[in-house]
Length: 192
Image (tube, rainbow, N blue to C red; front, side, top):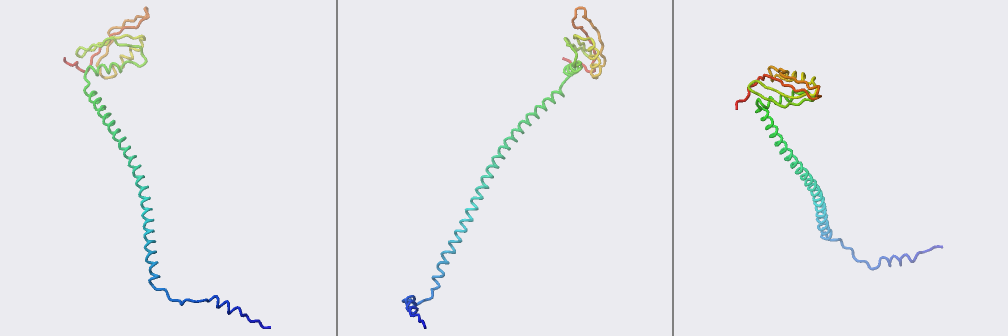
């Protein structure tokens, strides 16, 4: 048996229906979307790049502001340190100038005070200078600290001679012993 498909021609006719004549698209229709889309894409890409650049510059600006604030604080600290340094330098300079300007009486008193033995119980009651002669009067609880005091005075180089003039031992009354030293200094007494 032979089969013939008659519907095929009917379905093909229905599918094809009324057909419009196909015309080629004009070039303007193809160029117009390109003219609109490409510049819009370029502008969008440029805007995106600029927004990224603005963000990075904003972050950098904030970092620089923080760094600037830190440097300003350091600058203030440095100025304070410089002011303190200058003040201390001027104090040191005044102290050095005072040391250089020390004269006989100050040098004499410094030498006598530094000659007292550290662990002695001794006190001085009178220090009198007349010319090159210096008389030191004082008391000591322990008599063995007096020879140390005399040797310290002699070793300092300030006095040419150091002599014990009076030593009154008060052991019976259990009091401190009184002493008088007579020294000859290398310096002249200042004229008044």
